[in-house]
Each structure stands twice: as C-alpha cells, then as structure tokens.
Image (cartoon, rainbow, N blue to C red; front, side):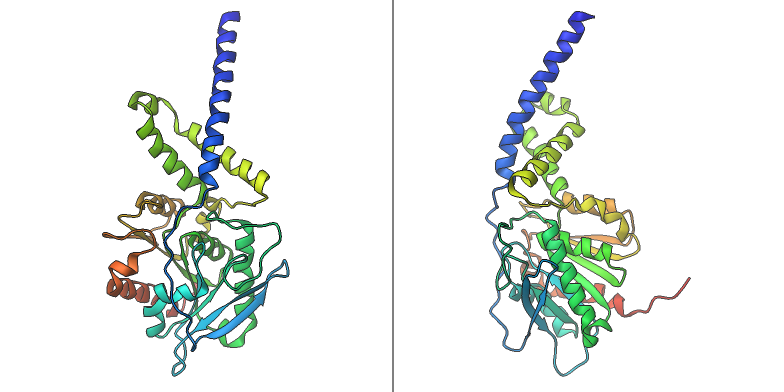
Length: 315
C-alpha cells in the first residue's frame, strides 16, 4: 500500500506542476486582447445624444436613433463590442431603424465618450462592471415616458452579446434578444483549449485528458486573472436558463475564427428552449454577418423583433 500511495502522491505532484505551468501560459493568452476588426460608422447628426449615470457615479454617453416622422414600433437597446462605439449600432441596426424601430446605443465605461472607472481597464471578457452599465441603461429607459411604453428588445455584438443575454435574463420586460458573435468566458476558453490540445498533443494524449480537467483549468485562469487584475468576470451560463421563455436569436459566422459557431450552439443548449435559434451566416467572419448578407440580415432581424409587438396573453 505504501508504494501505491507514493505513486499517487507523485502523480498528483506532477499534475500540480503541469497545471501551474499550463495556467501561466493560458493566462497570458487570456489577458491578451485579440486584434478585433471593429465596424465603424460616422456620427449621425440626426441622432439624439443621451447620457445617464451608473451605480458607481460614472456618466455613460450614447445616442438614440429613430425615424422622426413615425412612432417607433419598439425599442432596441444595443450593446456594442469591445472597443466599439455607440455609433457602430448603425452598422448592425440600419435595417431595424429603417423599418420603424428606435435604437438606443451607448458606450460602456472606459470606452468611447463614456467615463473611465479609476483602476479598471476593460478587455474583451465581460465583467460585472459592464453588467452594471446595461442595468443603468435599462433604468434610463424606464425613466423616460416616451421609451418605457415601447416593446423592448436587446441586441449585442461580441462581448456586448454576453451582456445583452444577462440583462435579458434579469429583466422580465425584455421580450427578445438578438446576439452576434456571442460567447461566454468559460465556454470560449474551453473550446480553444480542446482545440489546442488536438494541435499540439499526440492524439492519444489528447484523448486521455478528461474534459473536466480542462474545465478546472478555465476556472483557475479566470480566478487568477480576477484576483490579479481586479476584474469581476461573469459566468454567462448561470443566467442562460432564465431565458427559456424569451425569444433568442444567436447569429454566428461560418468563418468566425474568434468565436466558432459551435460556441453559439453550446449557448443555445444552455438555454434549453426551442425558442433559442442559431443562424450561421455562410462566409461571414466575426461580427461581419451584415457585411456579407445585408438584405437577409435586415429581413431576419426585423422579423425577429417584430414578434415583440404581439401582445402576450395570460394562460
């Protein structure tokens, strides 16, 4: 028994050394912002400038778009991608605006025209700070009589998608949420670690490592970064089951090298509802679906958010 215990101790020590080394490598990758190509759009002089305050006392700024000659069919709160501007809403929502929806877009803290939070540098992973920003936007909408009466939907892009999904899960008055390039921190990390293991390890070694081993590594990396960088990362999967009774459309690009379509399908599985749809756009890269299929993109999004106008009946 002594020799068996010694072997177990040696194996555990070896696993600990390898895991610490692997966590250090993955941590550097985790904290390095990918070279995203952000869709840009010039400022629109017809848009209404808006600003509101967060629970931390920060002022966030953005714009409200709508056709002045008609009453909006509904309101879409747009959550932009990392390093994106509130003006980028026009790159995704032009069809919705032309069809009569109002779109409210804002810059998250530390981005664009909004205030910075001292000591916090945002990156491409969603945190509770950005969740607070979306909550502040929803409070702003509720404070305006011309907006609070409109059917409300959310749209997010890349990191903004995660935040839109969380906000929809927390807000019963949100009727529909559409996301492009959506991901959760853990699911995306897990996907890439499994992918890397198949590239850099022999197949027999990759097959021997259980999936839970990789999951533990993702948790360790996330918590290490949280402690070192003071970033309160969110685990999106905890919110997704609350979206079972909501309309959800996940848009993903067939050629997305940052967020593989499998990640969107995994998010849909966590929602556990047939109302969660996944649309994979042929030939599209990350956040570029409308660039390659503008007419179909506008048609699908308009049809999707139009269901908000149908009043719900009590069962």
